Image 1 (cartoon, helix red, strand yellow):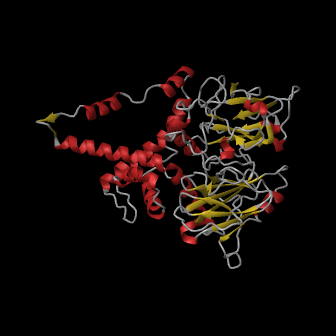
Image 2 (tube, one colour; image 1 turned 30 degrees about the vertical axis):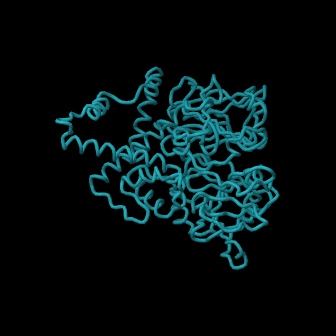
Image 3 (cartoon, one colour; image 1 turned 135 degrees about the vertical axis):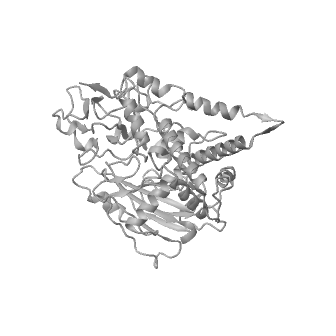
Length: 509
């Protein structure tokens, strides 16, 4: 089965359970009697005269191979995600530092990419510092963007700027503060002099994701943010005059599958990544894990039929694990939920690099990149009027998975704490793409001006039946689940002190 197979079936089965059954289905310890037997067999291999039997040795080696493959997929998930986006983009629009597709009429559900925002203008480019050398990104005034390496870690400023190190953000949330500047991208192994006159950021991979976002005030007037994006210039250092001219193809309304593989094809892609990318010294242990399943830099990856079968099962298992991790609050951190008395999850429980003082947060990172791409400090910073916050909901007020067979209501109290704008978007729970519900966009935002109640609050209706409220209804698909992201751009004080709280998503008749 593909990603619309085993996960979707499991989700639908859970969504059709009773409330108590659903809670137990979500929280029960993993493994049935078959699974317990499997682990018991591994733990209780008989040693005869100090040696296990040849058949048991093969079983243990298969298990080791399978486990290494699962963990390799989980480790590589951020790279698999962004590399898939790169390949799909280059196939459709062409490759090169000068190619910057822009979704000029917004991004709708026809673009298959994890949790896109339909309520901003997107520009997404992919550059290679090994191929083209040091690159300059000339950012115009009024721009907002993110620079991530291909493990989706924010690029870090080579030196302190205004007394601090910067990471990832450029434009409005970056060191140029929206005034425009020239950013210089350094590859991970660059040892030369850094020229003056640039904000120099170093990448830990040769490939870099250039992610631009433009904001609008009227959904019928999108020309201005597009115009700002089309002023961006990218060129090799010292070669501005001879650089290839920028191209800004329109990505809107073009069916495009940018999703990462959920089966054995993931390891073919990982082999390409390992062969093309810089060998970061901090990754030596994981590269050893990957080498143990046959993937080494500069060597062909040719698994035999038995290995390919195990790899296919391992990828599907890892894909399933990522989803299971994403549905519930992360417990390794203290802020897995935004509110103690609500179901809204914090998708960034920590920081944009998912690092603690002396280890990395693997499960929060896996849960995030299962359904999303790109990270920067502006997405995780706890400062008023800066960046954005993304409360997520997979379940309703009773803890039942959200189902397109039902009707729901979401109340947003008066004075929504978003200095720039807010939006509510529906997503497919298997792929993370925008829910293809037949509406122009699977979202409602500030600019749509949904009707307010007498107390200033806003009721949004989410479900299969049109309640006749006009701009306040998001359509769902019967027989299919969904999840919700509430985006708050420029979150204000009442969000952080929790005096403003959205309702849970409440089931209605």
